[in-house]
Length: 552
Image 1 (cartoon, helix red, strand yellow):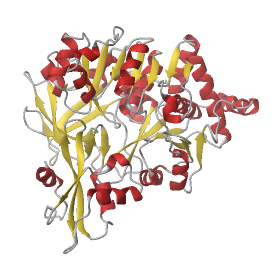
Image 2 (cartoon, helix red, strand yellow; image 1 turned 90 degrees about the vertical axis):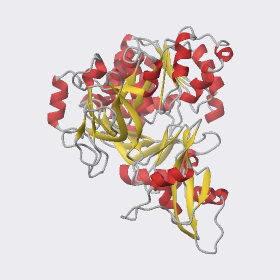
Image 3 (cartoon, rainbow, N blue to C red; image 1 turned 120 degrees about the vertical axis):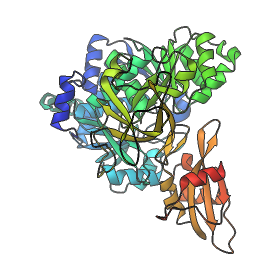
Image 4 (cartoon, rainbow, N blue to C red; image 1 turned 60 degrees about the vertical axis):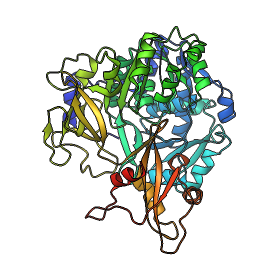
């Protein structure tokens, strides 16, 4: 499967921004040069999550494990271009899946463990997978069985129960080796389809090639100052850009050890940070704020090997950044990215003052900027008027951030492409920014063109929930919107209009209804507001911004 036009491949290859490396090719290189170096390690509490003991694999062992799984998947009929949906927590098997599917030339589509039947069936209609891999036990839930019930036309296998990735027989391995000898590896082939919510309520698949991910990995590694053999602690699920580009591909590129963590457990996270002697990690703003306010807690651990930390998904606190740098001696990098390929970073080198780094990002790829390095050479960015499409170059005027370059995808899976790119090929991010700074070398995010709700870093389409609520008995109309929350950034409020003479539903009843329809728990409203009518525009569309103003 390839989505990139030949002209784009030739252009980026000629610039040295794309090449011939694949994910499994990088693994083979590390297994040959650093066979005994730790490649991936499970969280120490894995038994509490999956009832299995934690695993630690060297690069040589990871190479063998992914050979075994690839051979088994080949025997199941999976080959080049086939699509494999995977629903696993952040465990070593998920890493093995990425490499095994890469070796087959197939496409991995990782989905969050929080997704239920509603989300899985919606994604499968777009992806049309040949196979789904799940797990029999995650915190007591049989994710594979739940997926099988939701995906009647898709074969679902549970790792460890239906499929033992450590036990490929010799004949199966020989067939796989013959397959690999005949394979034509292509760095421009699509390796993954991750998912991002859209304003229409339909999940959007984001196909990305090895070269796209490697471009993201290089910019991320440069921002975080990754070095050969570093130890990276990853607390983010391997289903999106932050983890796949910033950790998985970067670790393969530089021979780094990938330490897994998730769901976030702050005491365990801090112990792993110390015990694994990690050189870099990334953490939510709320956790870093707590640590900045509690120097006694920070001082209980030995973080002497830690060079820097990353954060993002919400504006950072300048005071937190200053505390980490002046009192703890650890610089904080502000990351802003997306599955589609946004790659912006504020580092001590590009934004020295905490006040700037906390809320502003360099205008990478814009002519006349003072920035140098990998990201400046890799990406391009600009701001346009969302309605007219005219470029905005003056400070203080909000506009839509647009992004282009080697990190950016070609377009959504099975999508018309309407309004995704500008006429000159820039991805329209849907984020409102303004040019700012003295001099104006930065962007500040001021809002969103799209209505996506960002609940603790999980992007939620309100239209998807609206559609389900339309079926709730005795409601004239209903819609959800975001309201601010100190810890998660945003939470969800359900705004409902009951039928005349009917009592409004309780929040509990509304959530029970949504759960019965298979929605993931993290998408449930946490507040309900009863209204006489929903605000609408002349086109009869709900004015979500007016709802937000009413409930904030």
